[in-house]
Length: 354
Length: 263
Image (cartoon, rainbow over all chains, first blue to last red; front, top):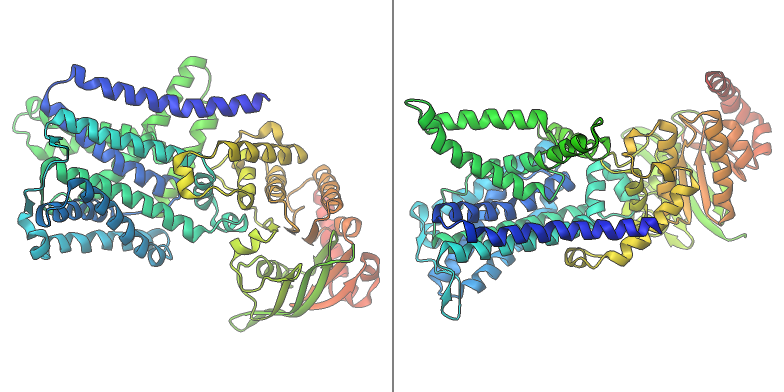
């Protein structure tokens, strides 16, 4: 019986965490009015949606994607073209974006997941490059390098999400939904099977898991998240051009996922926040501290901090800080139970990546 | 009790120019323990891999309780009620002991991706939890449920793999060298566990080098040599078959002694 109460407690813990998280975020605009800070928070929300998908794919299923910029861009352009060019409702634009990214991902998934490790990384890398070139070159559709303007705001009956506060709530509402769905997936048989694939694909199959199908499914989920984020991005800036959708962007997402913790859903919002805030703070701070320091210098400090985090908290800040807390509470050695899980995960993933 | 559970007929497999299994046929009845023995390289694991769908046979047929298995992918074979352990233990190293066994319940769970995302899993998770804990208790690992699987000693890892396979409630259980790495006490416990599995009408195929275990738990023994079936029969018949003694037992007795000395 105690085991069942334990289960109930775990379920409560899952949703309490999310509830508290949502409450704190909902209260934030009461204290923070600066449009600059709110716009940073909006971007953190967008990156959270993207990073959660990447965590599911890489941290749980152990499959690398270096091509998520393609799906972020595809989502943004699909929405922009549907609304700015064809005059459809922005809400419909979001739906189209998610359907299109999901559809493209589903078609690509089967052949691409026949590959493993380095080869999968290379193939997804190629995918990102192809779409970046498409955004630039298919200028009749995408407007080429100068992009598409006139993407409308999202609105409900004349009430438009045109100010940062409003959009803040919209983006974080979407992020909360993706977090909830991801937490649910992770705590189900699907999540278990995804981690099993990571652990031993042969054994997972011998338990009845259709691993090819599962990989494809979770790839589609993470691409639909990327499509959603892309679409929300387009309707926030009301302008889309190819420059954000480069490989560099995917690498930034990887950093967010790794810093937050690959093998945990909660790593996503914290990783996204930490990396985004760090970038902004350093951009403001470094030129003041160092004479003649330009944009290049902040990247050096940024890289250094990342190295420190990855050396001392290789399982990501969420589990790393959790472990520090446990150690502080108990005054004893590290509880190997929690920390031990992600460490080999990340090592294996890094090995896969090279 | 005379119902045929597994029927293997004329199985053939070669890798490149090397023939691993040649024209092997045998049957296993419901609730029988059939041991597959033979020197290293005799084709035992290849046979297991064909039955469990890891690769298809070049020729021949595999029938499980009237359904044809050969050519099916591993996950479909598993869903028909075939569970297995591996010669080199294949645990999910990133998961706890309990989670490993829960994964064994996969073929009995039904939640799809959409239902999972909506969170409609509580009842299934509770059922899975109970079933998994029951299997863990059966192999004596319940108190280690929350440890990471790789933190167990090798002997317990083998037991865990067995618990995971049992959690699938298989009709046919394939055990690939289950005593490798077990100490004497664990081996005795394993023999008792196998007898209990048989009592539940599960058919067991056992690849094993440790002759004492084979002789004590097997109903029938199939002897492979260079990919071909050399002999088949009750353990004492096989033990006294001069061809078997020449090809296998004489040589393997030496191995057995070495094993015992090591223990």
